[in-house]
Image (tube, rainbow, N blue to C red; front, top):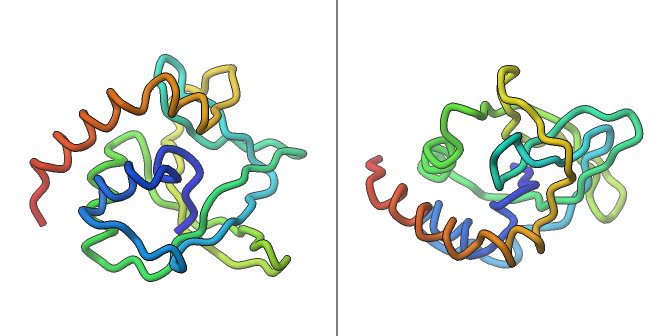
Length: 138
């Protein structure tokens, strides 16, 4: 699975999955032909097609069915999983699932950056994420 937003943050991913992933289960990857922007009125991102765009993210390996159900719960109704092709650091390409917004979700104008989100929103978001996931049942 390719993560491009808040799930690239180790604390967020651990809160969503209920465990930390092994460091060797994640690798950098790049998605060509897309931009990462904030959803209009929100602090988290979405992907939008863009002919010259590119989005850096993380490719996660070894996720199981329980992980996927937890990720689906976290992503909620705004997103659906879709398959895209990403390029690994070694130059090889692979198909990966990622969460794409539904057509009715409006894109904002500004590019979304993980470091900016961490400084401005991470603390409050983590509290909300932990509360959301505490109510999740398999």
